[in-house]
Each structure stands twice: as structure tokens, then as C-alpha cells.
Length: 113
Length: 107
Image (tube, rainbow over all chains, first blue to last red; front, side):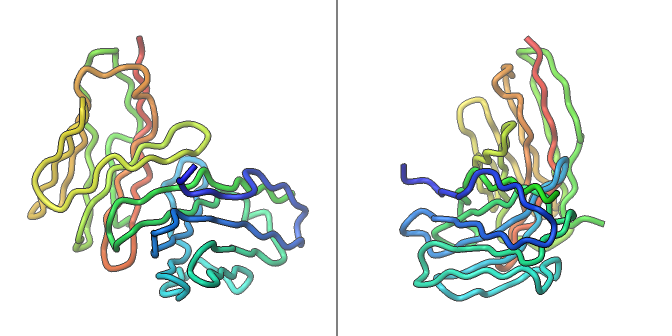
């Protein structure tokens, strides 16, 4: 499978716990995006990488959220001290060039109890 | 106000009907994407447009840069077209997404 892969597919956690999600983009894609989507809404931009550099971070992203993309390959999104409001689908997408066709992963559905 | 607005929010059609979904945006864009999201979250990119019109099978996407408006048309709609259709405007490094149009095609 050469698409965008996200793990885990589902994560249930207790409030206050830390969680980490992983995204493996399409191998030649140097642009990687993280989005968050809640029911009935379109995806909301969280952060964006070009290779290993995190170029932009949404104001929606509190200090509890951190993302990395070491070596410009896979990326991780960590949420510390999770809150119920963090419950959402976390989507990763990659593209070859800016503005070009986006390829999405299946997402990680986070439920914070 | 959202940078990208879609209409209608929900749409129900009979199989075979011609369907139009509209997208208006307020930001200057370099491109506009139409995406399809099926239940369960999987998102598929349908089109990327910067001008004019594109066609793929029964799907047609148009964009009018001056009017900041794009439309997605589905000809001879089929129940398998039932999904949420999302437009996304690209400006700089950012994608601004509409909230989606939920389409249900009834046999």
C-alpha cells in the first residue's frame, strides 16, 4: 500500500493522559499536513511540514500539542494532558508540491473520556 | 465568517438526477480542491482547479476566479455517489476547508 498511513485508527484515553499519533506519508511527498475534524465540520488545519521543517502552526493548537517530522519522513502528533474537547478525528495528508493534490490517511479517531 | 462557504449543507436526490454543489470563498487562492469523504472518514481528492473546468467521468468541476466561486456537478447521480463533498481553497501554505455538503442519492 503506497497511500498515507495513520496509526492507530482509534484511540480511547482518559482525560489527562498523553497520546501520540503517527502518520506515514507517501514516500516522495515532502509536504505533510495535520488536520482535526469534528462531526459535521470540515477539516481544520493544525500544522504543516515541508520536509522536516514545521513551517506553520495553527493558533488552534495549544501548547499541549506538538508535532515532529524527524528526517522528513513520518510524522508524529502528540497531545499532552488530553481534554474532552480534544476528541476528534485527526487526519494526516501529504502532497508533492504546494497546493497540489492532497492524499489523506484514514485518520485517527480520538475519544477522551 | 468562514473563508469557504458551501451550499447546500445537505442534499437528497433521486438516482439519475443532475446535482450541483456550490463553493464560495473569500480569500485569494492559488487553487481549489474538491474532496469526497465517505462514512468512516476516508477522504479522496477529486479535483484540483486553478481555472476553468475539469471533468472526470460523471463529475465536472468549474471555477470562476473573478467571482470566487466553484461548482461541482454530478451527472446521472448514483447511490454510490452518496458522501460528503468538501471544497478546500489553497492560499499560501494553507488549505481552508468548507464544512461539506452531505449528499444522499436514493435509488
